[in-house]
Length: 359
Ligand SMILES: Cc1ncc(COP(=O)(O)O)c(C=O)c1O
Image (cartoon, rainbow, N blue to C red; front, side):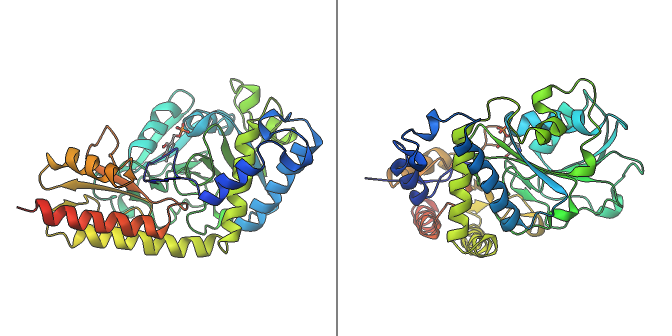
């Protein structure tokens, strides 16, 4: 068997042990005599899995009792619309912090359902100082994306919202580090990076925000209705929920989120050191204090080298290192499942490549 180190931004690498467990359980999951893909969402067996998973996540992330946990479809982008639909029934004024492509897109989608005020807009390298941010005093919520997957920019300090509920798109950063859930109104994360496979979105919502949906909100994306139905209003993506369960078990096996975060910091430091010590051969446009600890875009002094770099990397089992099509260059995504050996191999490949092509 030959497994590559897959640096894709998502769907992304999964731990070998998770895939092996899924394989083992494929023909007979949990003594049902069926695979998980053949299990009904209304069976007792699945309901147990769903309820246990909620308990495990609550423990792992210290989710307070007044927060509800949902598993919904629609992906991250679906929830760009479902957020204003669910939260603006009483007040349509909302604030958005724009730090990159995903929060920019969230603004575009929200404009259909809400009056959007843009609090600040980041450049490709930095976020304007918070003293220049312009909030609406009575906003229904303040929205931000803690980690911008495409531009590789991360907001490391929690935005101060003066009591206005904070909504966060944690799609590319959920479980990558510890967070204080009680500081948020809503957290959502599409699963295909740190939580498993595509097709499902985790939503964690404070229960006092559940009664504010607009008329236009479709039933299956109405957070309150889904809470009342334990995410089972319609056919939940059963196997995607199962994969989240396996990933949560895996994080626990690693020693929990704090341990995984420690490993993540070690991994990403090696990669930034490699870029910063390359005498300009590689570059990263983001100012140090805003750099993402998860998605690392990098450029080449000689842009023509990108194609050769990607081809040579693939040859040695380092795959999907291309940057997002909107920005070009290369990008390495170091989600929880990327082992440190994968980063070591990438760094040593990059050093050799630079030596060979520095001219
Ligand atoms: C931060 C962030 N938000 C939202 C999305 C969109 O998620 P989806 O493709 O599930 O709609 C992505 C996808 O990569 C993302 O990285």
